[in-house]
Length: 314
Image 1 (tube, rainbow, N blue to C red):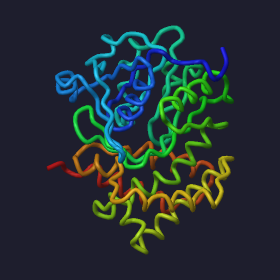
Image 2: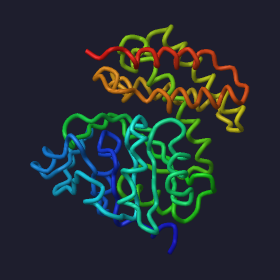
Image 3: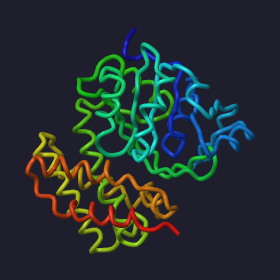
Image 4: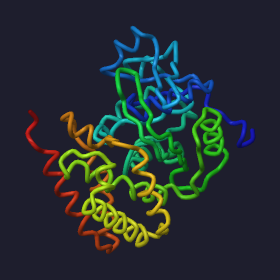
C-alpha cells in the first residue's frame, strides 16, 4: 500500500471540543467513519443528530453523526484522535483501552509538551503520532465549531522519522480539506508551535482577558509577546531545534488577521475551567531550565498563570 492510498477507515475522536469537532467533522465529510466520544453535549447532539462546522464561507453539517457517551460503546478503531485538554490526561489510562485494537494508532492533537511521552508510556511508542493544529476555532454550541482561520495541520511520528503511516494520514487530511504537512521531527515541531502558544495563550489571561488583536496593537504587550517568542526560540536552540527569526515574524504577523480572537486558554479561564498551565508553560519551562536556557519571562508568566488558575471560582 502506498503513502497516498493508506487510510484510516474508523476513527474515534476523544474530546469533542473545538479541535476535536473541527478535524472530526472534516474527516467524516471526507469519508471516514468518525465516532465522537462526548460528555455534556451528547444529549443535544443526539437529539439534533448532527455536528456543525461554521466557516466564513458558510456552514457544513455532518448528519447523521455518530456520537457516543463511552469508549466501550465505540469499541476498537483504526485511529484514536486525542483532543482532550491536557488537564484531563490523568484519565487516558482508563478512557482509551476500549478503543485500542492490535493495529490501532493514536494521534494526539493536544497542546504543549508531554502528551506524546505519556501516551507512549501507556500504550506503546509504536502507536503514537502527534499533530499540531495551527488554527483559530472555538466551540460555539453543542456539537458546533466556528472556524475563524483554518490554518494548517502538521503531523509527525513520535520518536522516529516519518513513514508510510503518517504520510497516508496527512494525505487523508488533505483529501478532507485540511492543509497538512508531515514533520521530520515531531519534538522540534512542538517547540515551533510554542512560539505562538506561549505568548498568545498566556498574555490574554494575565493582561485581564484581552483578545489576541489587543496583544498585537498594544506596544507594551506586543513587545512582551515578541520577547517571549525569543525566549522559546533560544530554549529550543539549546535542545537542538533551530527556529528561524522569520518564523517568529510570520507567527506574529498572522495574528492580527484573526480579529478579536479569544484563544482556548482564555476561554477556559473566563469560564472557570482549569487552564493547561503545565503542558503549555510549565513543561517547556522545566525543559528549558534543564538545558541551561535563560527564560525569565517564561518563568514569570508560568508563575502568574499558576496563581491565577488557582483563584477561587465564583
